[in-house]
Each structure stands twice: as structure tokens, then as C-alpha cells.
Length: 91
Image 1 (tube, rainbow, N blue to C red):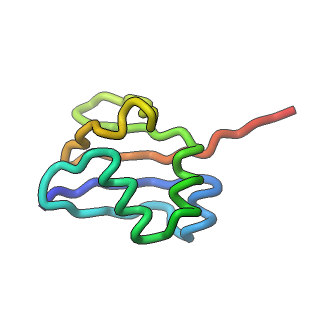
Image 2 (image 1 turned 90 degrees about the vertical axis):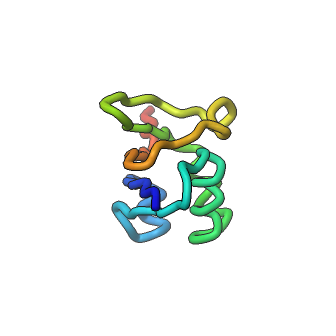
């Protein structure tokens, strides 16, 4: 089994009541498959919030900011860490 570790902050953490969790897959999932798993677990409202946040991928010693519009079909390697970070705006 392939495990992807997710860490949540801000609004997403408040909505689901968890700081982090692991999801298991038979093979390396795409970002889209990972988001669909979150949708099945928590619903569309949480997914919409996730897609408005900064999504960082940490894998093989590299950190990359993911953009849903460009990276949804990107394969996420087993053992990767995905951080979903709320953007803070000020005024």
C-alpha cells in the first residue's frame, strides 16, 4: 500500500477537526485522486476550501507548491507529505 501524509492548517483544520492524517492507495495517486478521496471523506465544502488554500508537496527532499489547474493529473509518490496551508490576508 502507498501512504500519503496530509497536514492541515487554518480553515480546513477547523472544518474537519484534524491536524493531520494518512490516506492509503494501491498505487501512487494523482493529485485529483487524492482530492477525490478527501471529497468522499469530508464532502464538497471541504474540497472547495482545500482548493482555495496553498498546497505544498514535500517529496524526495523537494518542496513544491502545487496549483490545482496545472497539477491535478500529477502523480504523488508514496511517502509524500502534502501540506494544506490557509492563506492569511491582511488589511
